Structures are given as C-alpha cells and as structure tokens.
Image (tube, rainbow, N blue to C red; front, side, top):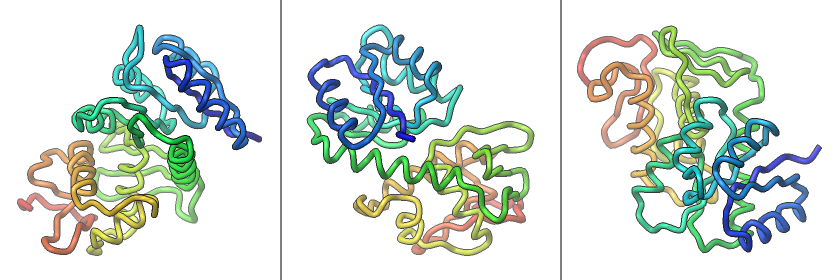
Length: 235
C-alpha cells in the first residue's frame, strides 16, 4: 500500500511540482493550500508524513505544527523560505522532524522524506523488549509513548530515537559520533551543535531540573550516558 503524504503549501507551482514528483515515486499525495485546510486534512486522512510550509494563510506553519503535535506523532518536514535559523530551530523545537529550505530540489526533498519515514518505521517496529524503564522515565516501544512519572511526554522522532538509544545502553558512555550515526541519517553532516541542542531539548522534557540532569549525563570530551539509577548529585 502506498504511503500517504499530506502536502500543506500555498504556492501552487511548488505544490504541483512536489505532488507530481512524489506520485512518480509511488506516494499517495493529498494537498492543502492553507493551514486550516491542512489541519482538517491531517485529522481526516491520517497521513504517514506531512510536508508543512512555514508561511501559510489562515494558520501559520508553526501554529499548525504546535497543534498537530498535541494530537499526533506523525513525521513532519517543514519547508521554509526564511534564512533566519531561529525559525528553523523553533519549528524543530515544536516537533518538526526535519526542515528543507527553499529553493530546494525535489530530489533533496524526496531523500529527506525517505530518511524520516525510515526512522519512523524503525521506531514503530516492536523490539524483543517492548518497554524501557529507568527511574521515573518509561518508554512503551510498541506505542512509541514516553512517560515521566504519570505524565505523557511527546518527543519528536529524533528526540525519541536519542532517548531510546541512550536508555537501551544505559550506564554506558556513548560517544557523540555513535549517537549521531545511530540517530541521524548517514546523509547528514556530523554537527556537534545539532546533537547538543537535541540533548538540551530532551533534558527539558524529562529532567526536573535540566541544568542539573539526573538521567542524561555529559561525559566531557566523549559524549553522553543515561544513568538508570539516578541520584540528586549535580552534574
């Protein structure tokens, strides 16, 4: 069965070109030209992936991303014509899994789509173990659900995979190279800053005091480790 892609883009030329290319690649494509229509389509069609323009009429891409993340873990790739990195960072922090800057080639976009869907499929497949637990942090792998105490915590795909990797190898120091190669696609250029930013975001989601993390510890000069038996010492 073809995977369903929802394209939310108000520029007709871009929407037509991307839709045509994706259909040629075997994807089932539905398009929406504004944020309100895109939200309705996302709720009604349950797409496998959403391509979301940052600048949309009626409802902005950032607002729409925020709303979708309250309801769904569907992978989201944001399209942005802006060069200001703040907009990209905000989009990722709100829950987008990747972004592509306009102008872009359809070949690049399709490569990003494949990478994100591959990660999403891997995260959804059941492991021999269906649950990871450490302290108050728990991951239900079969449902891709993270809870801290009794509170569910939504994590975008890469943050989820990062936490999953750290908890799977709890109490072991994992190098930055290993984490990046495991969580990010091989097409990405290694960037220490990218990994460190995602670690910071992850700490903000699961740590009571992100500035004094109990679980995700920094091992200077090497990488990070997840400490299963947490204590209250500063780190």
